[in-house]
Amino acid sequence: MYIGLDLGTSGLKGILIDDTQRVLAEATAPLTVSRPHDGWSEQAPSDWIAAAESVMDALSAHGLGRVQGIGLSGHMHGATLLDATDEVLRPCMLWNDTRSADEAADLDADPMFRRVSGNIVFPGFTAPKVDWVRRHEPAIWAKIAKILLPKDYVRLWLTGDHVGEMSDAAGTAWFDTGARDWSDDLLTATGLSRAHMPRLVEGSAVSGTLRAALAGRWGLPSGVVIAGGGGDNAASGVGVGVVRAGEAFVSLGTSGVLFAANDGYQPDPATAVHTFCHALPNTWHQMGVVLSATDSLNWYAGLVGADAASLTRDLTTLQAPGKTLFLPYLGGERTPLNSASVRGAFLGLEQATDRAAGSPQTRYM
Image (cartoon, rainbow, N blue to C red; front, top):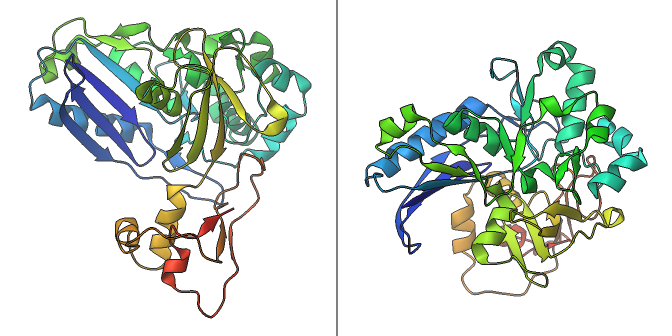
């Protein structure tokens, strides 16, 4: 049997499958996001561990004595800052946290970042967020010993090791995406070094083994392998079979993604399209990202005092979009605008506009 753990923005999901990929059990533990200031989006890493424990408790009810491996995926770009004893220094700044717009612009003004990483330095990426900490929270900055991406903090809990993988690391702005390795030059430019980073493996490689205490707690055999895994969209690409050039998929979660696999490194940062490593060796991918996809529906549901499920259920038959337009820039935008300050709007409102006009039948522009 095999376990998959996916650290999402709104919840941690777990699945148990057999060697024919038949689903044996599923479990989910909810997570919440804190937004204490405009543009901020944070989670406590301790909540991820509590959610993972809850999910594993649920899966263990089905018997885990035949589990051979655990795979990890999760939301990208989060800055999880640890001291020399692996204690978390502050809440994790998430992928949709845009407070570091000034820091991102400063880094992006250095041509080396686009040339080496193959990407614009977006405010949501890891490097500008950590640079924000350097400028605004110097006491915390001085204590940073390791910087982990969110799923790799879960891996630290599972294995005791600091390990990352290529697809997630490519979204930090510290990564040489073509060479599939940390860039010493980019790290130095932000006052860091390779010592602050986890070691890297490919997504399909072994990153470590499950700690004995956790194996005993849930009845797993000794030596269970933890795979390198992948960033959420790269892992989804593997899951749906988008692993060769010419294959693509659309994903609508909290964010919206158009993802296309490539068999070579083909950066084009001027378009605001991301170019990252895939979760498989010698494979890359490109993707365009809308920050608020189903998150827009959740926001609208709260605005009209409903829930997303009832709004979509009440749509009945599928219809063409009406006159109402919605700009889904609730917290800035990446592709193609690359703006942390742009905000959303309804357009084309008229006397005939009703609650359903703001539903998923609205045209998103």
